[in-house]
Image 1 (cartoon, one colour):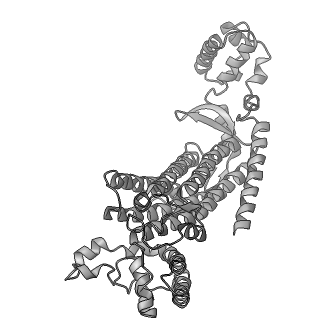
Image 2 (spheres, rainbow, N blue to C red; image 1 turned 30 degrees about the vertical axis):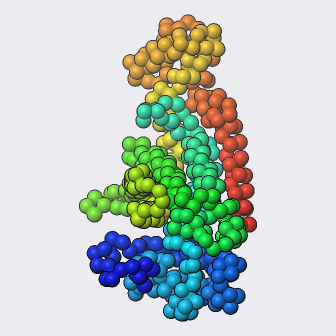
Image 3 (cartoon, rainbow, N blue to C red; image 1 turned 180 degrees about the vertical axis):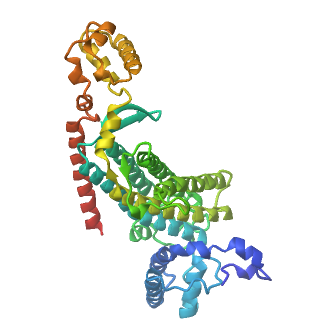
Length: 467
Protein backbone atom coordinates (compact mmCIF):
# COMPACT_ATOMS: atom_id res chain seq x y z
CA UNK A 1 0.00 0.00 0.00
CA UNK A 2 1.67 3.21 -1.17
CA UNK A 3 1.19 6.06 1.28
CA UNK A 4 1.42 8.66 -1.47
CA UNK A 5 -0.51 7.19 -4.44
CA UNK A 6 -3.28 9.77 -4.96
CA UNK A 7 -1.11 12.15 -6.96
CA UNK A 8 0.10 9.43 -9.35
CA UNK A 9 -1.65 7.83 -12.33
CA UNK A 10 0.62 4.79 -12.56
CA UNK A 11 2.65 2.67 -10.16
CA UNK A 12 6.37 2.55 -9.57
CA UNK A 13 8.54 0.45 -11.87
CA UNK A 14 10.09 -2.71 -10.53
CA UNK A 15 13.56 -1.20 -10.81
CA UNK A 16 12.51 1.93 -8.91
CA UNK A 17 10.92 -0.21 -6.21
CA UNK A 18 14.17 -2.13 -5.91
CA UNK A 19 16.16 1.04 -5.18
CA UNK A 20 13.42 2.87 -3.29
CA UNK A 21 11.88 0.27 -0.97
CA UNK A 22 13.48 -0.01 2.44
CA UNK A 23 11.38 -2.75 4.06
CA UNK A 24 14.10 -5.36 3.49
CA UNK A 25 16.29 -3.55 6.03
CA UNK A 26 14.17 -1.08 8.03
CA UNK A 27 11.92 -3.92 9.18
CA UNK A 28 14.35 -4.33 12.07
CA UNK A 29 12.64 -1.23 13.48
CA UNK A 30 9.16 -2.79 13.47
CA UNK A 31 8.88 -2.79 17.26
CA UNK A 32 10.06 0.81 17.49
CA UNK A 33 7.67 1.94 14.73
CA UNK A 34 4.73 0.34 16.53
CA UNK A 35 5.85 1.78 19.88
CA UNK A 36 5.90 5.28 18.35
CA UNK A 37 2.52 4.69 16.69
CA UNK A 38 0.90 3.76 20.01
CA UNK A 39 2.13 7.03 21.54
CA UNK A 40 0.94 8.96 18.50
CA UNK A 41 -2.54 7.42 18.77
CA UNK A 42 -2.73 8.57 22.38
CA UNK A 43 -1.59 12.06 21.39
CA UNK A 44 -4.25 12.23 18.66
CA UNK A 45 -6.91 11.21 21.16
CA UNK A 46 -5.84 13.95 23.57
CA UNK A 47 -5.86 16.41 20.65
CA UNK A 48 -9.47 15.47 19.84
CA UNK A 49 -8.71 13.72 16.56
CA UNK A 50 -9.59 10.20 17.76
CA UNK A 51 -12.43 9.08 19.98
CA UNK A 52 -11.71 6.92 23.02
CA UNK A 53 -13.05 3.87 21.19
CA UNK A 54 -10.97 4.56 18.06
CA UNK A 55 -7.79 5.04 20.08
CA UNK A 56 -8.40 1.90 22.09
CA UNK A 57 -8.98 -0.14 18.94
CA UNK A 58 -5.80 1.24 17.40
CA UNK A 59 -3.74 0.59 20.50
CA UNK A 60 -5.07 -2.95 20.85
CA UNK A 61 -4.26 -3.73 17.22
CA UNK A 62 -0.83 -2.12 17.49
CA UNK A 63 -0.06 -4.00 20.70
CA UNK A 64 -0.98 -7.25 18.98
CA UNK A 65 1.34 -6.36 16.09
CA UNK A 66 4.13 -5.48 18.51
CA UNK A 67 3.83 -8.84 20.23
CA UNK A 68 4.13 -10.51 16.83
CA UNK A 69 7.11 -8.32 15.94
CA UNK A 70 8.89 -9.07 19.21
CA UNK A 71 8.28 -12.79 18.67
CA UNK A 72 9.54 -12.63 15.07
CA UNK A 73 6.17 -13.68 13.69
CA UNK A 74 5.52 -10.88 11.17
CA UNK A 75 5.77 -12.09 7.57
CA UNK A 76 7.75 -9.31 5.92
CA UNK A 77 8.88 -11.40 2.96
CA UNK A 78 5.32 -11.88 1.72
CA UNK A 79 4.73 -8.11 1.76
CA UNK A 80 5.15 -5.71 -1.13
CA UNK A 81 5.03 -2.65 1.13
CA UNK A 82 7.56 0.13 0.61
CA UNK A 83 8.85 0.42 4.17
CA UNK A 84 8.12 -0.54 7.75
CA UNK A 85 5.77 2.44 8.16
CA UNK A 86 3.51 1.41 5.28
CA UNK A 87 3.70 -2.22 6.43
CA UNK A 88 2.35 -1.35 9.88
CA UNK A 89 -0.29 1.01 8.48
CA UNK A 90 -1.46 -1.59 5.95
CA UNK A 91 -1.79 -4.16 8.74
CA UNK A 92 -3.90 -1.72 10.75
CA UNK A 93 -6.16 -0.85 7.83
CA UNK A 94 -6.65 -4.55 7.06
CA UNK A 95 -7.69 -5.11 10.66
CA UNK A 96 -9.60 -1.87 11.43
CA UNK A 97 -10.58 -0.34 8.08
CA UNK A 98 -10.99 3.46 8.14
CA UNK A 99 -9.94 3.70 11.78
CA UNK A 100 -6.50 2.50 10.68
CA UNK A 101 -6.43 5.26 8.07
CA UNK A 102 -6.73 7.90 10.81
CA UNK A 103 -3.48 7.08 12.60
CA UNK A 104 -1.21 9.04 10.27
CA UNK A 105 -3.12 12.29 10.85
CA UNK A 106 -0.61 15.11 11.45
CA UNK A 107 2.36 12.76 11.15
CA UNK A 108 4.94 12.33 8.40
CA UNK A 109 7.21 9.44 7.66
CA UNK A 110 9.98 12.01 8.14
CA UNK A 111 9.38 12.52 11.87
CA UNK A 112 8.24 8.91 12.17
CA UNK A 113 11.48 7.38 10.87
CA UNK A 114 13.61 9.84 12.83
CA UNK A 115 11.79 8.73 15.99
CA UNK A 116 11.98 5.03 15.12
CA UNK A 117 15.69 5.21 14.43
CA UNK A 118 16.44 7.04 17.68
CA UNK A 119 14.48 4.43 19.60
CA UNK A 120 16.41 1.67 17.79
CA UNK A 121 19.79 3.30 18.49
CA UNK A 122 18.91 3.89 22.14
CA UNK A 123 17.91 0.25 22.57
CA UNK A 124 21.16 -0.91 21.02
CA UNK A 125 23.23 1.42 23.19
CA UNK A 126 22.05 -0.62 26.17
CA UNK A 127 22.94 -3.98 24.58
CA UNK A 128 26.29 -2.70 23.26
CA UNK A 129 27.22 -1.37 26.70
CA UNK A 130 26.64 -4.88 28.00
CA UNK A 131 28.87 -6.30 25.24
CA UNK A 132 31.69 -3.87 26.05
CA UNK A 133 31.41 -4.71 29.74
CA UNK A 134 31.73 -8.37 28.76
CA UNK A 135 35.13 -7.73 27.15
CA UNK A 136 36.23 -5.69 30.16
CA UNK A 137 35.25 -8.59 32.41
CA UNK A 138 37.26 -11.03 30.26
CA UNK A 139 40.31 -8.75 30.34
CA UNK A 140 40.10 -8.41 34.12
CA UNK A 141 39.70 -12.17 34.52
CA UNK A 142 42.77 -12.76 32.34
CA UNK A 143 44.71 -10.23 34.41
CA UNK A 144 43.57 -11.91 37.64
CA UNK A 145 44.69 -15.34 36.40
CA UNK A 146 48.20 -14.06 35.66
CA UNK A 147 48.91 -11.33 38.21
CA UNK A 148 52.59 -12.33 38.58
CA UNK A 149 53.34 -12.68 34.86
CA UNK A 150 55.80 -10.27 33.25
CA UNK A 151 55.94 -9.70 29.49
CA UNK A 152 58.01 -7.43 27.27
CA UNK A 153 56.55 -4.00 26.67
CA UNK A 154 57.09 -2.72 23.14
CA UNK A 155 57.57 0.52 21.28
CA UNK A 156 58.10 0.39 17.50
CA UNK A 157 57.54 -3.38 17.94
CA UNK A 158 60.96 -3.50 19.62
CA UNK A 159 61.36 -4.71 23.19
CA UNK A 160 61.38 -1.60 25.34
CA UNK A 161 60.69 -2.19 29.03
CA UNK A 162 59.19 -5.12 30.95
CA UNK A 163 55.62 -4.81 32.22
CA UNK A 164 53.13 -6.98 34.05
CA UNK A 165 50.74 -8.85 31.77
CA UNK A 166 47.93 -7.50 33.94
CA UNK A 167 49.12 -3.97 33.11
CA UNK A 168 48.71 -4.81 29.42
CA UNK A 169 45.18 -6.07 30.10
CA UNK A 170 44.32 -2.91 32.02
CA UNK A 171 45.49 -0.74 29.10
CA UNK A 172 42.71 -2.20 26.97
CA UNK A 173 40.27 -1.82 29.85
CA UNK A 174 40.99 1.92 29.75
CA UNK A 175 40.24 2.02 26.02
CA UNK A 176 36.97 0.15 26.45
CA UNK A 177 35.94 2.39 29.34
CA UNK A 178 36.24 5.33 26.95
CA UNK A 179 33.99 3.42 24.53
CA UNK A 180 31.43 3.10 27.31
CA UNK A 181 31.61 6.83 28.00
CA UNK A 182 31.09 7.60 24.31
CA UNK A 183 27.97 5.43 24.30
CA UNK A 184 26.72 7.30 27.37
CA UNK A 185 27.46 10.66 25.74
CA UNK A 186 25.65 9.54 22.59
CA UNK A 187 22.56 8.59 24.57
CA UNK A 188 22.53 11.94 26.39
CA UNK A 189 22.82 13.90 23.14
CA UNK A 190 20.39 11.90 21.00
CA UNK A 191 17.60 11.44 23.55
CA UNK A 192 15.21 14.05 22.15
CA UNK A 193 11.99 13.11 20.37
CA UNK A 194 11.28 14.22 16.75
CA UNK A 195 7.66 13.00 16.73
CA UNK A 196 5.27 15.89 16.10
CA UNK A 197 7.67 17.69 13.77
CA UNK A 198 5.73 16.54 10.71
CA UNK A 199 7.46 16.53 7.34
CA UNK A 200 9.54 19.60 8.22
CA UNK A 201 7.32 22.38 9.60
CA UNK A 202 5.47 20.83 12.54
CA UNK A 203 1.79 19.91 12.64
CA UNK A 204 -1.45 21.87 12.86
CA UNK A 205 -2.96 19.44 15.37
CA UNK A 206 -2.50 20.36 19.06
CA UNK A 207 -0.53 17.30 20.12
CA UNK A 208 1.41 17.48 23.39
CA UNK A 209 4.99 16.86 22.24
CA UNK A 210 6.32 16.89 25.80
CA UNK A 211 3.91 14.11 26.76
CA UNK A 212 4.88 12.10 23.67
CA UNK A 213 8.59 12.48 24.46
CA UNK A 214 8.07 11.47 28.06
CA UNK A 215 5.98 8.45 27.14
CA UNK A 216 8.67 7.21 24.74
CA UNK A 217 11.43 7.66 27.29
CA UNK A 218 13.01 10.74 25.73
CA UNK A 219 14.36 13.59 27.84
CA UNK A 220 12.52 16.23 25.78
CA UNK A 221 11.11 16.93 22.32
CA UNK A 222 13.40 18.17 19.53
CA UNK A 223 13.13 21.96 19.50
CA UNK A 224 13.29 22.65 15.75
CA UNK A 225 11.18 20.73 13.25
CA UNK A 226 13.61 21.25 10.36
CA UNK A 227 16.50 19.86 12.35
CA UNK A 228 14.42 17.10 13.94
CA UNK A 229 13.60 15.37 10.65
CA UNK A 230 16.98 15.91 8.96
CA UNK A 231 19.40 15.27 11.84
CA UNK A 232 21.48 12.12 11.61
CA UNK A 233 24.24 13.20 13.99
CA UNK A 234 23.15 10.45 16.36
CA UNK A 235 23.80 7.84 13.66
CA UNK A 236 27.19 9.37 12.88
CA UNK A 237 28.07 9.36 16.57
CA UNK A 238 27.01 5.73 16.84
CA UNK A 239 29.18 4.86 13.84
CA UNK A 240 32.11 6.87 15.20
CA UNK A 241 31.82 5.13 18.56
CA UNK A 242 31.60 1.76 16.82
CA UNK A 243 34.61 2.63 14.65
CA UNK A 244 36.71 3.76 17.61
CA UNK A 245 35.83 0.67 19.61
CA UNK A 246 36.54 -1.57 16.61
CA UNK A 247 39.92 0.13 16.31
CA UNK A 248 40.57 -0.78 19.95
CA UNK A 249 39.53 -4.38 19.27
CA UNK A 250 41.74 -4.45 16.19
CA UNK A 251 44.76 -3.33 18.21
CA UNK A 252 43.95 -5.98 20.82
CA UNK A 253 43.73 -8.56 18.04
CA UNK A 254 47.06 -7.45 16.56
CA UNK A 255 48.83 -7.74 19.92
CA UNK A 256 47.40 -11.19 20.52
CA UNK A 257 48.16 -12.41 16.99
CA UNK A 258 51.80 -11.48 17.59
CA UNK A 259 51.87 -12.93 21.12
CA UNK A 260 50.39 -16.15 19.70
CA UNK A 261 52.96 -16.41 16.90
CA UNK A 262 55.71 -19.01 16.91
CA UNK A 263 58.27 -16.21 17.10
CA UNK A 264 56.83 -14.87 20.38
CA UNK A 265 55.02 -17.89 21.82
CA UNK A 266 53.67 -15.92 24.77
CA UNK A 267 50.19 -17.42 24.65
CA UNK A 268 48.03 -20.09 23.10
CA UNK A 269 44.44 -19.68 21.96
CA UNK A 270 41.68 -22.19 22.51
CA UNK A 271 40.51 -24.56 19.77
CA UNK A 272 37.09 -22.89 19.83
CA UNK A 273 38.46 -19.62 18.39
CA UNK A 274 41.08 -20.96 15.98
CA UNK A 275 41.10 -22.95 12.75
CA UNK A 276 43.44 -25.19 10.82
CA UNK A 277 44.85 -25.37 7.33
CA UNK A 278 43.47 -27.51 4.52
CA UNK A 279 47.06 -28.26 3.47
CA UNK A 280 49.33 -27.96 6.52
CA UNK A 281 48.26 -30.27 9.35
CA UNK A 282 50.32 -28.50 12.02
CA UNK A 283 48.65 -25.10 11.64
CA UNK A 284 46.45 -23.50 14.31
CA UNK A 285 45.46 -20.12 12.95
CA UNK A 286 44.14 -17.16 15.02
CA UNK A 287 41.27 -16.60 12.58
CA UNK A 288 38.90 -15.09 15.16
CA UNK A 289 41.42 -12.34 15.85
CA UNK A 290 42.16 -11.80 12.18
CA UNK A 291 38.45 -11.46 11.42
CA UNK A 292 38.09 -8.93 14.26
CA UNK A 293 40.92 -6.96 12.71
CA UNK A 294 39.47 -7.32 9.22
CA UNK A 295 35.92 -6.26 10.11
CA UNK A 296 37.30 -2.99 11.42
CA UNK A 297 37.50 -1.59 7.87
CA UNK A 298 33.91 -2.59 7.19
CA UNK A 299 32.67 -0.53 10.14
CA UNK A 300 34.93 2.41 9.21
CA UNK A 301 33.38 2.28 5.73
CA UNK A 302 29.87 2.73 7.12
CA UNK A 303 30.96 5.86 8.98
CA UNK A 304 32.67 7.33 5.93
CA UNK A 305 29.71 6.50 3.68
CA UNK A 306 27.21 8.35 5.88
CA UNK A 307 29.51 11.35 6.30
CA UNK A 308 29.77 11.64 2.52
CA UNK A 309 26.00 11.18 2.12
CA UNK A 310 25.16 13.92 4.63
CA UNK A 311 27.78 16.51 3.71
CA UNK A 312 25.90 18.09 0.80
CA UNK A 313 22.26 17.75 1.84
CA UNK A 314 20.08 20.86 2.09
CA UNK A 315 17.38 21.11 4.74
CA UNK A 316 15.19 19.30 5.40
CA UNK A 317 14.64 15.60 4.63
CA UNK A 318 16.07 14.11 1.41
CA UNK A 319 15.73 10.50 0.28
CA UNK A 320 19.53 10.20 0.32
CA UNK A 321 19.09 9.85 4.07
CA UNK A 322 17.55 6.42 3.60
CA UNK A 323 21.19 5.34 3.15
CA UNK A 324 21.70 5.87 6.88
CA UNK A 325 20.27 2.52 7.96
CA UNK A 326 21.97 -0.36 6.19
CA UNK A 327 25.46 0.78 7.16
CA UNK A 328 24.45 1.49 10.75
CA UNK A 329 22.59 -1.82 11.14
CA UNK A 330 25.55 -3.73 9.71
CA UNK A 331 28.09 -1.80 11.83
CA UNK A 332 26.17 -2.50 15.02
CA UNK A 333 25.91 -6.20 14.12
CA UNK A 334 29.63 -6.48 13.33
CA UNK A 335 30.62 -4.58 16.47
CA UNK A 336 28.41 -6.83 18.57
CA UNK A 337 29.91 -9.97 17.00
CA UNK A 338 33.48 -8.73 17.49
CA UNK A 339 32.88 -7.77 21.13
CA UNK A 340 31.45 -11.23 21.82
CA UNK A 341 34.29 -13.05 20.06
CA UNK A 342 36.87 -10.88 21.84
CA UNK A 343 35.48 -12.13 25.15
CA UNK A 344 35.66 -15.74 23.95
CA UNK A 345 39.27 -15.34 22.79
CA UNK A 346 40.37 -13.76 26.07
CA UNK A 347 38.61 -16.43 28.10
CA UNK A 348 40.36 -19.15 26.07
CA UNK A 349 43.95 -17.88 26.21
CA UNK A 350 46.68 -19.72 28.08
CA UNK A 351 49.72 -17.63 28.94
CA UNK A 352 53.18 -19.19 28.81
CA UNK A 353 54.53 -17.23 31.77
CA UNK A 354 58.06 -18.64 31.58
CA UNK A 355 58.39 -17.84 27.87
CA UNK A 356 57.10 -14.33 28.60
CA UNK A 357 59.59 -13.85 31.42
CA UNK A 358 62.56 -14.95 29.31
CA UNK A 359 61.54 -12.58 26.51
CA UNK A 360 61.02 -9.70 28.96
CA UNK A 361 64.55 -10.15 30.28
CA UNK A 362 66.05 -10.06 26.78
CA UNK A 363 66.68 -7.14 24.46
CA UNK A 364 68.58 -5.08 27.07
CA UNK A 365 65.30 -3.84 28.44
CA UNK A 366 67.02 -2.99 31.74
CA UNK A 367 69.18 -0.29 30.14
CA UNK A 368 66.84 2.39 31.48
CA UNK A 369 67.28 0.96 34.98
CA UNK A 370 71.04 1.40 34.58
CA UNK A 371 70.57 5.02 33.48
CA UNK A 372 68.27 5.68 36.46
CA UNK A 373 70.81 3.98 38.76
CA UNK A 374 73.49 6.39 37.52
CA UNK A 375 71.19 9.34 38.25
CA UNK A 376 71.14 8.07 41.84
CA UNK A 377 74.94 8.28 41.79
CA UNK A 378 74.79 11.97 40.93
CA UNK A 379 75.21 11.69 37.18
CA UNK A 380 72.87 13.79 34.98
CA UNK A 381 70.32 11.62 33.20
CA UNK A 382 71.47 12.55 29.72
CA UNK A 383 75.02 11.54 30.61
CA UNK A 384 73.73 8.38 32.28
CA UNK A 385 71.71 7.61 29.13
CA UNK A 386 74.90 7.81 27.07
CA UNK A 387 76.82 5.60 29.52
CA UNK A 388 74.04 3.01 29.53
CA UNK A 389 74.13 2.98 25.73
CA UNK A 390 77.86 2.22 25.78
CA UNK A 391 77.24 -0.56 28.30
CA UNK A 392 74.67 -2.06 25.90
CA UNK A 393 77.27 -1.99 23.11
CA UNK A 394 79.75 -3.78 25.37
CA UNK A 395 77.16 -6.44 26.21
CA UNK A 396 76.37 -6.92 22.51
CA UNK A 397 80.10 -7.35 21.79
CA UNK A 398 80.31 -9.91 24.59
CA UNK A 399 77.14 -11.65 23.45
CA UNK A 400 75.60 -11.46 26.91
CA UNK A 401 73.05 -9.54 28.99
CA UNK A 402 73.99 -6.33 30.81
CA UNK A 403 73.70 -8.02 34.20
CA UNK A 404 76.16 -10.71 33.07
CA UNK A 405 78.97 -8.19 32.40
CA UNK A 406 81.70 -8.36 35.05
CA UNK A 407 82.02 -5.34 37.33
CA UNK A 408 85.45 -4.57 35.90
CA UNK A 409 84.01 -4.03 32.42
CA UNK A 410 81.18 -1.91 33.79
CA UNK A 411 83.64 0.24 35.75
CA UNK A 412 85.85 0.64 32.70
CA UNK A 413 82.92 2.51 31.15
CA UNK A 414 81.91 4.39 34.34
CA UNK A 415 83.73 4.21 37.67
CA UNK A 416 80.54 5.21 39.53
CA UNK A 417 79.11 1.75 38.93
CA UNK A 418 79.45 -0.54 41.95
CA UNK A 419 78.33 -4.00 43.07
CA UNK A 420 74.94 -2.61 44.07
CA UNK A 421 74.07 -2.28 40.38
CA UNK A 422 73.33 -6.00 39.93
CA UNK A 423 70.10 -6.13 41.98
CA UNK A 424 68.93 -3.05 40.05
CA UNK A 425 69.39 -4.91 36.77
CA UNK A 426 67.13 -7.82 37.77
CA UNK A 427 63.80 -8.09 35.94
CA UNK A 428 61.44 -7.75 38.91
CA UNK A 429 63.34 -4.77 40.30
CA UNK A 430 62.84 -2.68 37.18
CA UNK A 431 59.17 -3.56 36.94
CA UNK A 432 58.35 -2.97 40.58
CA UNK A 433 60.32 0.28 40.83
CA UNK A 434 57.62 1.89 38.70
CA UNK A 435 55.42 2.18 41.74
CA UNK A 436 53.60 5.31 40.65
CA UNK A 437 50.00 5.97 39.64
CA UNK A 438 49.56 4.42 36.21
CA UNK A 439 52.81 2.47 36.47
CA UNK A 440 53.49 -1.23 36.06
CA UNK A 441 54.70 -2.23 39.54
CA UNK A 442 53.01 -5.19 41.17
CA UNK A 443 51.55 -3.00 43.92
CA UNK A 444 50.19 -0.40 41.50
CA UNK A 445 48.78 -2.93 39.05
CA UNK A 446 47.18 -5.01 41.81
CA UNK A 447 45.49 -1.92 43.23
CA UNK A 448 44.28 -0.84 39.79
CA UNK A 449 43.01 -4.34 39.03
CA UNK A 450 40.93 -4.55 42.19
CA UNK A 451 39.54 -1.05 41.60
CA UNK A 452 38.45 -2.07 38.11
CA UNK A 453 36.91 -5.31 39.39
CA UNK A 454 34.94 -3.34 41.97
CA UNK A 455 33.83 -0.84 39.32
CA UNK A 456 32.76 -3.70 37.03
CA UNK A 457 30.72 -5.29 39.81
CA UNK A 458 28.90 -1.98 40.31
CA UNK A 459 28.21 -1.66 36.57
CA UNK A 460 26.89 -5.21 36.35
CA UNK A 461 24.75 -4.71 39.44
CA UNK A 462 23.28 -1.59 37.87
CA UNK A 463 22.55 -3.53 34.67
CA UNK A 464 20.77 -6.23 36.65
CA UNK A 465 18.56 -3.62 38.32
CA UNK A 466 17.71 -2.04 34.96
CA UNK A 467 16.94 -5.46 33.48
